Length: 252
Image (cartoon, rainbow, N blue to C red; front, side, top):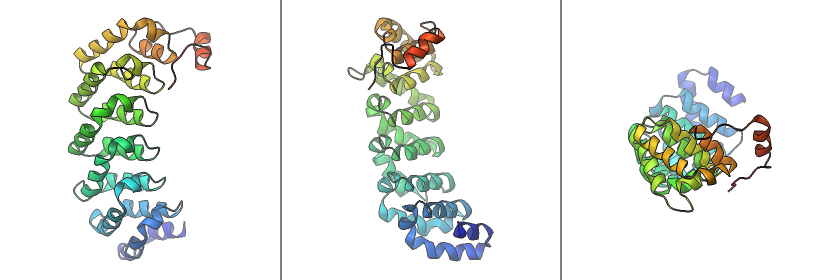
């Protein structure tokens, strides 16, 4: 706290002096429950060119290891927000290369989500290309399903259409219907009800309609059907029983 306060009130030359003394200890700092706040503050208050020694030190550790750390993930997120993509390209390339595994990780997934939200269009597309082959599996995993939702939120319409095509073509155990009946996958499929691509939106709705009996028997599948207006919402009492686990459902 004292060092953070000192950085806040210091003038530019003093901040640079502080930074030069701290950069060699960047890894120990980001691994500390208190020191990581100092590193993120440096990223937020210093001009990006001055941060290059910090970026170089983090590269020695490797972005995948940093992204998997409880506090290190925050450091990468701040770098994505405050530094030009070209400056941190080696770190971002390492994240992209490991993006499928990071999407499943309890901390790494936040870095992937953050890049999808704040990264350049080229970087988003690179991440998307890495994730697309596994998108059906990722959609049903607790943390990775949020990454798939961010793809739908922030990648261009062509990427969303490619996700739909992948789900429509996928076979068991990750068919569209099975993803819709999954505790986490249902949120991904529900999001498809808002697709700008009317043709693919209609294709998804048609598939769900064809599988209505099995989907309706699942508490998660039923929520998906409701989102596409294929069934009426349950009365409040029945919804409460289902939410409590009394009703039929698919949980994975």
